[in-house]
Length: 522
Ligand code: ABU
Image (cartoon, rainbow, N blue to C red; front, top):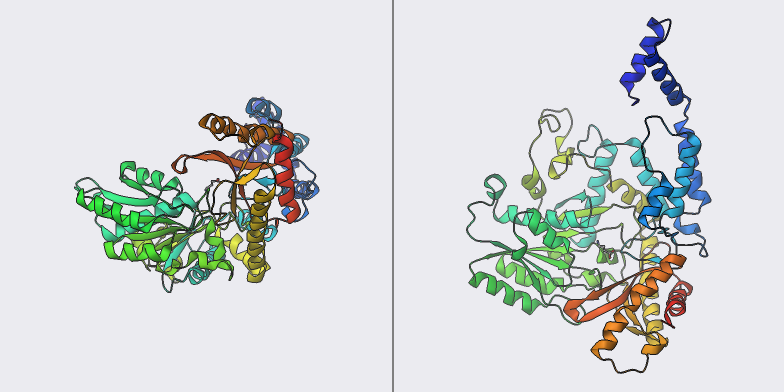
C-alpha cells in the first residue's frame, strides 16, 4: 500500500469510527504503524555518520583505500536488490543498502581519482548543499525562496565582477552543456528576437555556430536542440596547443557568408576538456565584433583560474565576452551541479526566456518583483545551486581558493616534469600543458627503443585500456584515456588535477609508479 497523507488521514478516521477493523483497515493499520514507528531524523544522522565513518569527505580520506570496488552492472544489480516491494523495507535493510551504496560507489575524494573534470566535494559546499536540500526550495520566486534568491543575485554579481562584466545578469543552470545552450539562445534572441515567437520556419538563411575542434560536444547538442542543425556547427582548426586559430575562424566566417549563411555565434573555450586549451579571447573578440557574432566562452573547466592572480591571465579578454559558462563543481570542488552562467547584456536573459506564468510571476505582489527571477530560466523547477557556492566562498575566503588553484597548477607542472623524466613516460604533446590537464603516453618495456611504425602505434593504443582495467579492478587509480583523431593521436592518458583534496608531489609520484607497475610488462 502506498503511504500518503490521505491514507494516514483515512486511517485516523477509521480508528475513530470503526470499532472492528476490516482486513483492509488492518493492512492500512500495520502499514501506518510501520510508518509511524520509523525515525527518519535518526536515520539521517546514521547516513551522516556513515559518511564520516567511511571518511568520504576529502580532507580525511585514507590514501590506502580503494578508489572503487568494481562490480559489473549485472552483479551490482543483484547485490543492491533493486526491486520495489509493496511493503516497506526495514531500517536494518535500509542501513545495509546505504553501506552498499558507499561500498560500490567511486570515492571521488580519494587522491587516486583523476578520471573526470570533477573530483571531491568541498565540505562547506556540501554543508550548503545539505541545508538547501533540506529546505527543499524551488528557486523561482522570492516568496518561496527569499534567502536563496538574494544569495543567487549576490553571487552572480560577484562572478560578473571577477570576469570583468560591468553590467549584466546571470543564472545557475543545470550543467555546462545547458549553460552553453543558454549562450546560443541569447545570441539568437539578441540578433533575431522574432524567432522566439515565430520559430525558425521561414528563416531562409541558416544560422551558423563556430567552435574549435577541441571544444566540448555540448555545442553540437545545443545546435540540435535549438533547431539550428548540427551541419551548421563549424569546427574551426586549432594550433599545436589546442587553441582555436583566429585566422581560421575569420576564413570560416567569410566562407559561410559566401554560402549565404548567417554567422551568429562563437563558442570559445577556456580550458578544453582534453588538452586544457585556452582560446585567445582578445583576438576572438575583435573578429566577433567585426562580424556581429556573439562571443560565448565555455569556461566550465578552466574558469576557476580567474580566482588566481598568477593564472587569471589565461582568461584575458573575458570582459569582452557576451556570455560565459563556468562550473565551480569542476576544479573548485563545489558540489555537483554548480554551473553559473553570466551574460553582459542586462535584461536579455529575461526577455529571451520569459513566458509570464500568471500563477508564479504576478506583477501586483507586495514586494519588489524583480526578485522573482525564475522566468529568466528555461526551467520552472530549479534547484538551489547558488547557495552552496556562496557558502563555501564565504566559509573559506578567496585566499584559500587562490592557494588551492596555484597548488593545483604547480602539481600539474610537477607531474609534467615527472612524465618527461621517467623512463617509459612521455608527454603526449610537445607544448607541455595548458590548464591542469596533463596528457601523456606510457610505453611498456617491449615498446621502448623501437621504430614507431603504424603497427607499433596501433599496438601501443591498446595499452591504456588494459592498464586502466587493471587499476580499476584493483581499485588503485582512476585516470582517463582517449584518442584525439584531429591531432592524429591514438589512445593516451589524460590526468586531470583539481583543488580538492589538494594534490601533493607524493600523489603525482604514486600515479607514475602505479601506471608503471601495471603496465611495464604488457
Ligand atoms: N563536461 C566535461 C566532462 C568530460 C570529462 O570529465 O572528461
